[in-house]
Image (cartoon, rainbow, N blue to C red):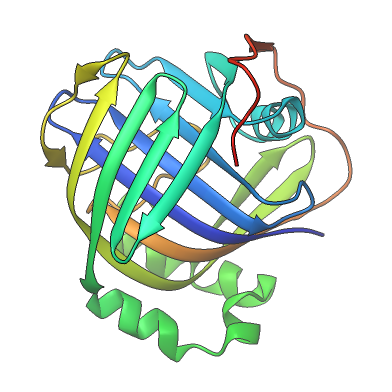
Length: 216
């Protein structure tokens, strides 16, 4: 059972770009941040800070392009600042949502237990369109998303290749990297991801470009 403990942020933009930030202080790959983005034309890209992260995440989800680039996420209070190769994002967290209050009420050991995560999957599908809590991670593996808190993202600016992507918008349509998307409303979710099962999932996309040494 591989365990990734951290946060996931999902944001949409007026241009149609949607992206997902994964920030993992504790994982089998060490501390890292990665970004998955889907352009309006459906092109899916992974921005990974190391070849190891690119290989693991690229084998777990589906992308049309994988890039190895410097990825850096910093915060000052409720403000977050992200640079990830061609993508730059500044976003602000609001208060805890009603769903966040419910998630925090579940004891940590229960919220991160595979049996609980599998049990609430049907509820998550109905309450949060596009969201699933359990599914395939490829290579005969199963992935579980154990959410423990949720804050709304209330403001954001995003540029891709230096081009302003417009105002913050819902994550719609849902992103298509894996078996589920993030909540439609831009959100910052406290989460533990578990990946169970043997085997290495394959992916035909190889990382391209070093983009220099990843910053920390």
